[in-house]
Image (cartoon, rainbow over all chains, first blue to last red; front, top):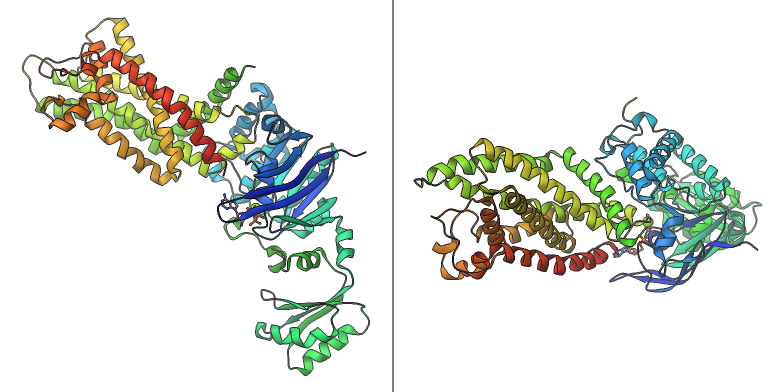
Amino acid sequence: MMTAAIVAREVVKKYASVTALDGFDLEVAEGTVMGLLGPNGAGKTTAVRVFATLIQPDSGHVEVAGIDVVANPRAVREVIGLSGQYAAVDELLTGYENLELIGRLYHLGKKGAKARAEELLEQFDLTESAGRRLKEYSGGMRRRLDLAGALVRKPKVLILDEPTTGLDIRSREATWEAIGELVASGSTLLLTTQYLEEADRLAHRIAVIDHGKLIANGTADELKDQVGGHRLEVALRDAADLDHARAVLAPIGHGEPVATQEDRRVVVPIAAAGGVLVEGVRRLDMAGIEVIDASVRRPTLDDVFLALTGHRTDKAAQNGEGVKAEETKNEEPVR
Amino acid sequence: MSAVGLAVGDGVVLAKRNLTRTLRVPDLMMSSLIMPIMSTLLFAYIFGSAIQVPGVSYTEFLLVGVFVQTVVFNSVITGSGLAEDIQKGIVDRFRSLPISPYSVLIGRTISDLANNVLSIVVMVATGLLVGWRIDSSVGEAAAGFVLLLLFAYALSWVLAVVGLSVRAPEVVTNASFMIIMPLCFIANTYVSPEGFPAVLRVIAEWNPVSAVTQAVRELFGNTNPDFPPGAAWPLQNSILASFLWIVVMLVVFMPFATSRYRKAVAR
Ligand SMILES: Nc1ncnc2c1ncn2[C@@H]1O[C@H](COP(=O)(O)OP(=O)(O)OP(=O)(O)O)[C@@H](O)[C@H]1O
Ligand SMILES: [Mg+2]
């Protein structure tokens, strides 16, 4: 039988005015990658902070590597590696000093900490910037260094909160590779992400959280099947037509059409593909709504997300290229 | 490793990190190295010469006041440093590591102690250049420095509580000054409290800064007959009073700061 690297049961965490986790359940099998997906404010970071012993749940039970996080946080910290949502690096120390400090605090000794720091700098392609202070690093370099910090002790359970947000495509690939290697060597990974592509590619299983509750859990294919059918997707020239288009398309749909303002799209769940595309476009044309793109396709993870939470991920809404505003700095300022 | 050994070991690693930071921030360098030198020179030349007392040196009397004021001001870094580390998420990173839960506070107070040693060394050097002398035995002089540093260390824990309670780093400095300004100036640091209005005089007499200043003056042989310490018990028994104050501050504020820290980080 597979043992679980992370078990959460009925976890509740309340802040003054919000219930961030509201009876959250999760199970991550040892040696696997679990992608935790959810819209902004769903409770992903709160869950991560509970697993990493940074905050205590109000009630419920959490075990990481078989250790109770409330009863024995010290032992949990021995076996986890954490990289939080915002890079927690020391701006005034160099890249090398940051990693060496973490090694010392893991009690690797002077030599051990030095060797590990050099290894990680190499692995994350930061050797050239090793002697520069973090405040001279770009957002992406910082993120990579923070990630390297989570790997200093080759953790049994690695917890990463949006590890590739703000990284360019090349760095994202490099990060995925590093994560892949670690998982291949037997570590377990819990990763929150806004990139469905990332979850699709890295995660064995995906858990969807919303309003502090687990609302779906399975492999990407299972989740897509769960939503079922096909999708008719049209893109309009004018966002003002969205509501009208929804009404026009409703009769041919199998479920409620959903509009997204940002990319002026309407997605309609349909039972079967045959003939619907032509029918849909004809109806829109007759209603005087200008269509710039139309297609019928299998559901994507994004549709799963939409069906489950009622809205698309932020990233998808920005055509998959979006990064947080404060993190749009260019990679590698000097070249 | 024992719990205490671990806390101190991790604390020392973190203290080294804090000191490295201090040396790299011009503002912090200013306050721990340049300011003490400037204060020493200003007080020695401006005030020391303005108040001419025939036969005795007012400079000698003043400089101990400058020493005490400097270590009191330095304690602000404890609170602002903690608040900043928490705000920037660095403390979360540390807390995800298997370190002692006390090591962040121990590291911070140790680095601030080292910072005070640095300030005192430059002030002593500057003081000697402008004619300040210790007129006592080596043993007494050493005891004077130890007392000064112990007091500074205890005070760090007090200001740690301020930093951990206020939390917004920009506000911590202001809040701290509201505490340390009266502490520094309603005292015998530069003048004799004899001339203060009644209420202020009582406060000055029982101010721990006064006891420490008087004790260090006695241990350095820097007392001045024109500025008698006053008849209050803490000033007549300044060394004992200083130690009592230090013990009380540590006993009260170490656990207080620890519980504040737990609250501040567990959000
Ligand atoms: N320290 C805090 N104090 C008060 N409320 C908080 C705190 N941390 C989180 N919350 C609230 O708890 C809820 C869950 O927040 P959390 O950060 O876990 O969401 P998230 O899924 O990580 O979102 P995002 O995708 O934006 O990172 C939100 O409503 C948030 O406002
Ligand atoms: Mg989050």
